[in-house]
Length: 73
Image (cartoon, rainbow, N blue to C red; front, side, top):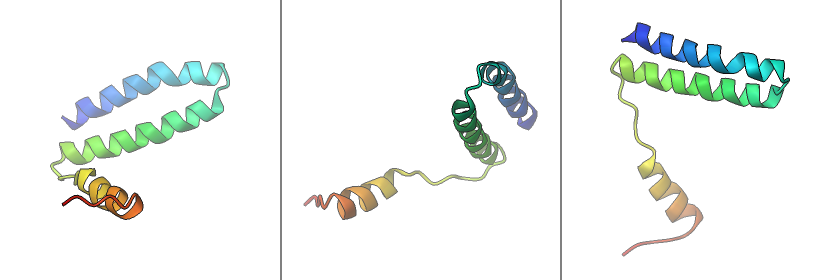
């Protein structure tokens, strides 16, 4: 499964990066690289069996309650 994950991410990178480099879209390349690394790390953690906590509770309690001051009864 890890091999398949690496092949898929390498394939997407192989397909996207040459076009970004040839057109000199350096900011897009940087953003693409950051998102790909993040997605690869998260996918790798899931493949090896590490549970990743969901962000919905963080968003609900930290942002909606504390930042927006919306309290539900």
